[in-house]
Image (cartoon, rainbow, N blue to C red; front, side):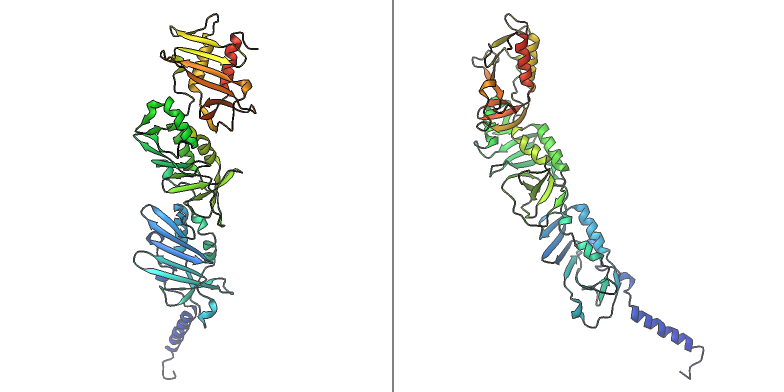
Length: 440
């Protein structure tokens, strides 16, 4: 050193200090700042395991899928955001570690594949001074530390990555719907063909839908094709709209076996429902044991109305164009009207307007729900019959109405089922009898 020029000595000291600073700090090179050294867009598969939980995310042509602890459709936006945050995890520093065994690597393992290379990272303990976590990755020789945000990032998966729309986008463009009604073990199947929806398979004549089919055979022969029964387009469209907008409000982290209650299958999602007890109802998608919660609106609409998809109205008969009507109510004299020159004529009474209102009410009377006849018998004190003669037929179509035994519902008996209808029919009958002076 004494033989060196004095002007060189400060320069050498500067070099020594710089090298020492680099050795002590040991920041990673810029091109290797990110832990996985991948982009979210390039990741084809990533598997994460910790605390007996395995989360596998696979990129497919139709989007991301979840497997492992939870086998389910992934929420595309949530999963994309998660992968972006995962790929943006930065290496904080390269610490000097005397014994790697002391940092307990492997508490959490991440294995990512981008189509070309596979990177596996093993998370260890937290550095008590910096708060960062030790991690060893296969794409770098050193053990490094990363921000503790990695722990919060993993804390809610896989449940936070589950598809939040109950049926995803499938419900918007559905071509097939399968339904299992409460109390049934089999599915009824509807398909879209030629712009219309058809019931092509049902779970038997003894099922609730099967009983409706047996009634419908006589009333709606014009809407039957090759053994299939045409369904109501509006009801199915409404169901699909509700199904498409149904969102998961909560995903349980506790395994519960799904009950054999009811189910709807649309597209790639088969959803089983528990019986509704609160505003939020538990459901299970694709037999996953971790239930989710959704608003019970979908359940109530589907299983309160699906039985009526084949018979949205009590009759398809154009009552206003029939030949004659005969109305009878318990304890009151029958009233018969015949069609003459386009008007209803009742001998001895001017009831043309009242019978016109009654016939229109019959035509537009919609079914509220389908009930089991034995569970909802008609009250003997409130029965009313309407007989409709069409095109000179020798036998009329008979419609039998009455209150339920507790008077809470207006019913129409359509053997072998009973349907609930809107109460306007009673008002129309009362108005008719009052105009005839026969109402007591």
